[in-house]
Length: 231
Picture 1: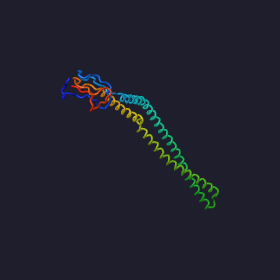
Picture 2: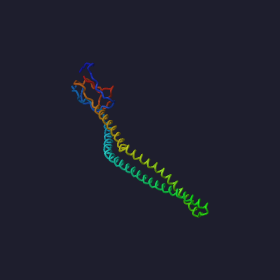
Picture 3: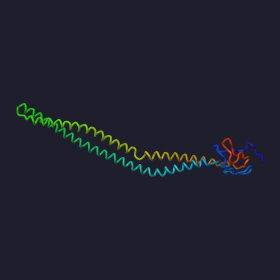
Picture 4: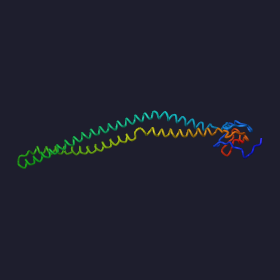
């Protein structure tokens, strides 16, 4: 059968591969959309199964992860609140110790000054003054320690409050968002692979006839190596 060359339409796959099925013969009439040939899809079928399995795993894991992240968020927030409460309580205790020791220090300093005055008048008790000096040294050390702890705990309270702010800011997003992004990428890859698989089924683009079959089952075809020509 002879056909006008200028009317011939090449039927070729988008990507190079092996021909698995040729479902028409030369000279056969075909309709638009009719399957003409099928390329070997074993490799892409395997890729699709792997993508589907991984996506199913992520879909299932996301349900659990969102619950886990919520529980983690609640736990972290509770810990931050407890830490703030504990350090605030410690700060209050140390502040009370500081104020008490400071008041005692002032009282001892006044007592020692009075004992000095009495000694100068020949009425003082040397033993009482010595005892007051020893007590003053201990109280002064306690006051210094308490003052240091008060400043340290003020810093720790601010840090604990910042941790609570950070927990509230982060919320439940971290792990779930990463997994959701991976799931979305897989879904896009899966859609692309399914489109590529569909393109490996070669169909007639017009009503017509098979002018020539250029390659046979098992041979390689590609964009520049058509399987057949229609007219």
